[in-house]
Length: 189
Image 1: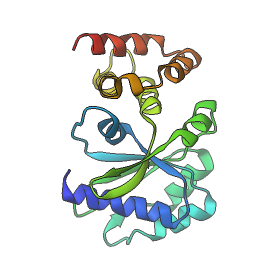
Image 2: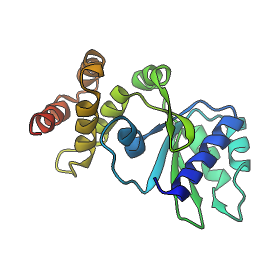
Image 3: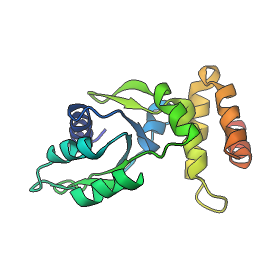
């Protein structure tokens, strides 16, 4: 892992911890942790920020070194959206996602797992929830990258993957087509 990216990850995690925010790394970094590693150019984090904690989080990033628009961050908290933190020297970017209160969002936070990435102790979405998210992000006709990431997790996790949990959300979130593609990618290897 690139040392600058590891330092950036550590900085974001430390700011979230200092602000007392529950969070989890998601996206390509989570799929690399739980599945087959691949290069990524950004960091995706789901964070349960509120009006107070977002100000504490933002204060951890010196405007001389980082781009973080506080108004945009506060709006993301109000509307359950997303904002960015960008380290100007390296161009590393974190997408900070404020979760909506959906059934799946409520189910996945208690399942998050603590891992060490490089030398940074952090929380990630569970392997199962990362598979589900990758399938949700995939759109028919779009890049297969999301489904390839999901298949990599399924292959690496093997029998330890809670397939009943995945199947429940595949049904509830109407992801049958994506799940069929993931299982076909697994069988093809």
